[in-house]
Amino acid sequence: MKNNEIILIKIGEIALKGLNRRMFEDVLKKNIKRKLKKIGDFKIKYAQSTMYIVPKDEDADIEKAVEALKKVFGISAFAKAIEAKKDIDDINQKTVEYLKEELSGCKTFKVEAKRSDKSFMMKSPEICAVCGANILENFKNLAVDVHNPDVVVTVEIRDFGAYIRGSKIKGAGGLPVGTGGKSTILISGGIDSPVAAWMMAKRGVKLNAVHFASPPYTSQRALKKVVDLLEKIAPYTGAMKMYCVEFTRIQEKIQECCPEELFTIIMRRLMMTIAEKIAIKTESKALITGESLGQVASQTIDAMVCTDQAVSMPVFRPLIGMDKEEIVSISRQIDTFELSIQPYEDCCTVFTPKHPKLKPVLKYVKRAQEEVDWSELIDQAIDECEVIKIGYDKKQ
Ligand code: ATP
Ligand code: MG
Image (cartoon, rainbow, N blue to C red; front, side, top):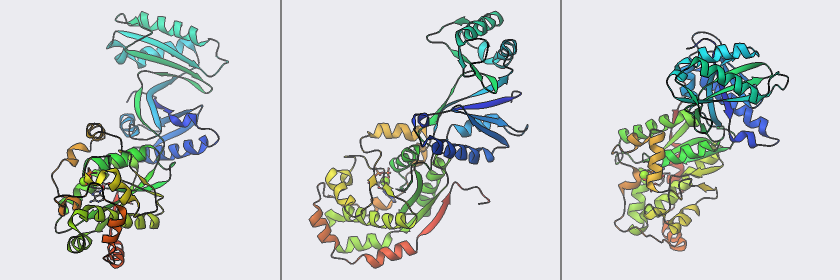
């Protein structure tokens, strides 16, 4: 760690909010605090649309904090910085010391100045000119390029200090988790649903999860894969509970009593019904799935209409218009892909019919489903479901 190094965080979309902006800022601050608590003792201060993260002692590791902050929604960009006196000589001296490594290793730079303290004696263009000249003098390898520089050196003159920073680090974007209500993700071990969960969390939604398992057709290892996937996205989504529902008896009953071509659609309607009941119990306002239009038979518009009619809650499908390639690209970015492609069974594929109906008609689906009284099986599945905690600290 470089001496006196701090982190400056730029809030993203929150800056566009109106009267309720304060609420978004407070949630973001709380989320950052919770995350950094695990790393060390940091002071968090918020002023003039910037969050200041200041280590309180030697053990508070800035590099670890940087890695953790990359996974906090609501941050568009951040940077490591140091504080200088509001004095141009001190700023010049500290710039050369602090950015030595970064500036020695590149060819072009520019200086940007932000002067929110209007009492500072130099205006922004003058700060840029003076600091730029100082950098050129000290780094013979460098030339100025205002259009496409390798490094942008930013000097900020704020009310309570001057700050110097080098390259920006990209944040996760989106809105702070907890500002967008709570929803329940139907999570499988596939590629799509973890991406769908991540995308909704990115819009500020707090999650809990429902997973359907059908032992002995699906194994403990398949269940562990789902838990591992949620653990992977938990640094973004925050801690959540996963409700693991044993689905075996219901699936066997479907196979026994329903027309084969409707197995999948009836199964999906029952999944939705159970997920909705769990969502209501846990104060979730909507359901989320990883469906994408036309990907498989159960994801045609007709099939999705039939599934949605099983519940009264809205069903969000953030991947609906995405190609598999686009979904895979996000799953690689959030590092779930390698886990998702591990070949473990899912209850959805256990009793797949040879020729599922591509355009199921609600009236007929309902009629077939009503041949059985599912209520007892549904209640039992919910009563017996196992709750698994994801992303909680060990002591929690
Ligand atoms: P995924 O890659 O997310 O598994 P998929 O393309 O394999 O999706 P399906 O198996 O048809 O598609 O599942 C569609 C959606 O249904 C999933 O994205 C997920 O939201 C939900 N789902 C599928 N299987 C399960 C399960 N075992 N438990 C809970 N939800 C599930
Ligand atoms: Mg699947």
